[in-house]
Length: 469
Figure 1 (cartoon, helix red, strand yellow):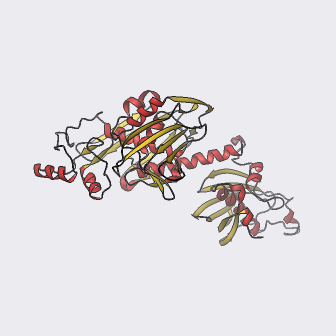
Figure 2 (cartoon, one colour):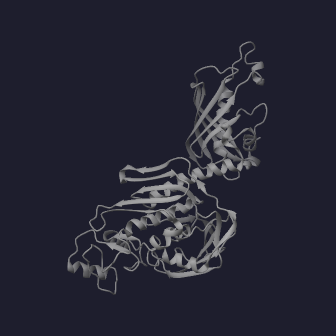
Figure 3 (tube, rainbow, N blue to C red):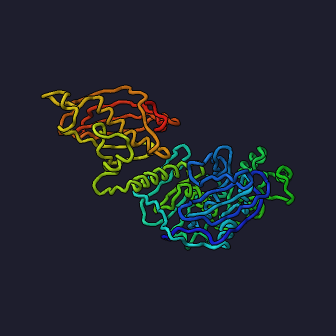
């Protein structure tokens, strides 16, 4: 695998018909600086608005992966992104003068050929690999979809599909080396669809630019000769259509015996680009689709953001800490005598955090609570929970140093056992709800594995400069 970031040598363009609109559009790839990432730019709109190729900007996955920001959208980006990922390009400006890229032949090859004409240029900065160091799994039992990422010092994808259709059957494929396999064995794999889907989409006016040259159409219902004539008129095709012996419309010859499985791998590769970093992992996928791909990419992106957060505060995990006290001081505004978290030992963004509070006789509140019988006030245990929750909350927003997390509610608080000097509180926080700037967490505090206190805590995130005084 390449170790340096890459962009392209010079701008290059590719024009063609868009799938949904049927309009001619032009896609232009341009070089980008180090650490820029992949961004789409709508040059047909005032101000040339940008949309980063990140999973946070996915707004629709019904017939492809659509990115959006406000009212600005770019449809069906997965094949373009697959070409970018397959050529291991990290930084790229992708200009498009319409709402969707040109469709081409339904594969990633037209974009690959354009990028190859532009030339790949190595940059000085190292690649920002996401090393997957734990198993990440997505499952949808109803649709029999499973996707898993496993630790691997490299990158591999294996895909299995089974549509219970005689023309397809069960298929599988695997990509084990991007540099030697992608261009020849996967980039040319075309999209495929079932005839009933094509008819429904045509009736809905959603494939004005589609043709039998841009997809493999699989017949999934009985067709009589007169129905073929009617279908030709319905789809407004100049050519006569017929059903071949393999269950495909017209004399379609698959480019690979398992071309549909290879195309599903291509789609998955493109959708995983939305993580925002190249992966070191083994990906195993059964029956993937854009919806599942994107949800899986969200899970992996959370891991990437967690690792980036740890790297940001330069904490070495060898001492058992994700955030030490110096990092906590950078994140929270609290100071002595009211900083009640000593260490964070694990964090899963938007989900869970575990912190430590070492309780010593030197705590200032023990002077009065209670003389001769030191007990940590329950309200301060709740405060310690809230501070751990604050670290989780603030690192899920942009510019956390400009924000404060303020109590809005405390419910179902229960105190199970006294906390005394010498105890170590292990505080576990789970995020229960997040809606805009309002967050609800459930906190538990343990001493030697026994539950000492728990509560539901609501908080609102506000700008520091606008916080009430």
